[in-house]
Image (tube, rainbow, N blue to C red; front, side):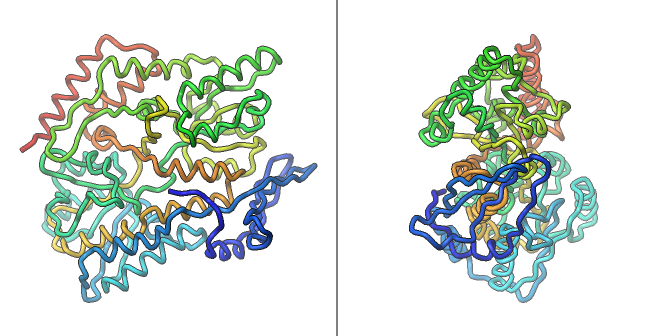
Length: 496
């Protein structure tokens, strides 16, 4: 994805729908005014910040992708078999329909999802119905339907942590048995295929129609504190590839020194909603995975004690920092919102909660290990994946529609989310670029998809790493716990 010059005409509809928010107290309100978008010579507009006492403006360049992903998605669609299904009904069952079949058209994202579904209904002569069902209820209903040999749904969207339970119950179709379903295409995430595969089987896949921006994490930072430290804004470091954990800690160390010199007590690193999985994020961000998996593989532990020790050096610099909040009970979001913290590591959706924050904040990806590495963001284990109930009789329709709905979502829904955030949420244009980059960095792991169903796999992978990061040392039982996880995977996910 992209960067940003002149905004596409579809933003005119956003401008017409945009309602001006009102500030309360002395909080900071962002209202990115696009009313004069097409006037002037430079194609720029302003982000307006209001307080009870003053109003200032800063330059704001409208967002546009560097490629026409709508056209690319239509090209992918045209590559699929030209089949029609005689006014058949197509049923989707999911615990959350907001990203796949939204109830309202309140945002540009929901509008684009609605338009996508209309295209699919017309092209394939189907009517799509989406049922919202709790994941546990879905599990019981799917088991009952499978046992009785009755139809349940065409495909299900599961939280990835539930995949192991469904697979263990034998109620998922091997996606590799479906005709026309090519999981090597760009609109499916290759790591998600590996995460959902073992031996000859693949039970699920994540694509652009399932992986919501809410599944990602980011680093929020206080721009005013960075100025007070007389340090560079980190945006350029991200773009030139040098936004590493070492670089991150140069900022926290400067914050600590500033506190010592000025007698202040600003926090360095904070987290709240993603606090429980902060070790996962740090561990994956430096290029690690918990389990190596994929087609024709027996899943196996993909780390060593040395690998974990190297990552622990990063974890210790946060967990042993007396000015860091690493638990979920200290109301870190309010601390950051009030301007009392330098960094806040949390989910992308938290940006909506910071709209009226007093802190003048910006957005960054989770750092990486070295400049030559890629940015990686381990998605939440509640992220939805596509699965198909075992014994499906509509295999042609399922494989074509599953492919098509992701093809037409390719980058497109994420771009719509970025546009929406530009208008309603983000404080500066550089943060728009950062959000765009973050949504290109998803990482997946087999352990997160099966650990809930197989506790010994969890204990030997992500739960072990979480305990190590919090304790600050490798436990004596490390080798035994890892070995047990390996044996469980070999027993339950054999090659044959």
